[in-house]
Image (cartoon, rainbow, N blue to C red; front, top):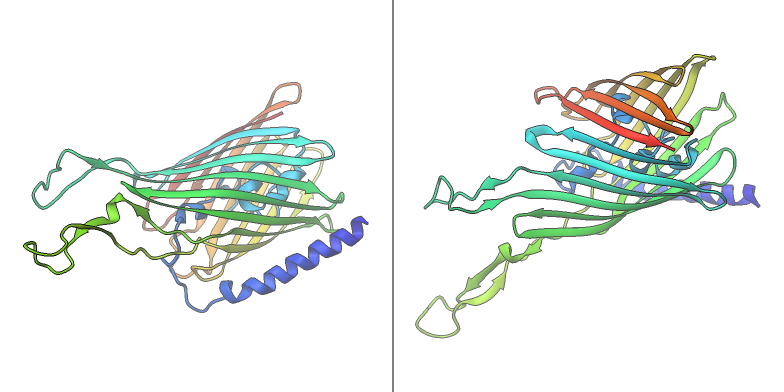
Length: 344
């Protein structure tokens, strides 16, 4: 029964991949044609220090972002995490999540992703230094995930999200889903991970900032005047992407482990690219990581990534994990990520 279910799911993933190729494999980059770009910012310092090559690693709570099936492979009964980054242009990025493994049911998880812009003065022609009002912009996503091991080598998972973006008094929202598979192959236990991210509805701005008064005949002395009207706003796709990754422990003994990973990513708003990374662990307590992000991506400013982490058991079955990552953004300033997790 399990083998039959595995084959059905495997064929479904292949069929889905073929069906989405028309959207994903393009000669043109289509940069700037999607919305909710904050969904493309990677979550988790471990993943980012490894260059974003994480769809076939994903054995912790950050699998919710990279490959939801991976959270079923966590050795902990549950996990709580918080990730913060001072993003480009003084923008703040935060990701928080909690997961719990329930025997015979699977792994349940909840996530919150936030991107916020500092408040700015509202400047007009009449008041170039500000008219007393302020405006801001922000993005928010709430997610609910579930993953389950169907066999000792194969897992599936999904992550349903509510997404909202706003600027001053105007906002847009959408629903999306991430779907992933995680397979440990017989070849040296090499992991093959695949995921679709942000498959969902389109977004369209709405709110009082797009309302205006309209005089149909242009004559205030006659006819209807000051009719409440609204600008017609366009609809835009979410940043859909398909990831296919490989990871393997190329060396492992009693104290040391060296894990390498490679991801191929196919977005709907850019050209295809590769991410690669390596993690060196000492006694599963000290971690050193390096990677390269967005190789072959057209006009990319991303590149080298570095980082490390510490896992410290503070009590029986309770481990504190602190991770750091640094990412080079070329002509833009580098970005630093920090996250703190508790595994129990």
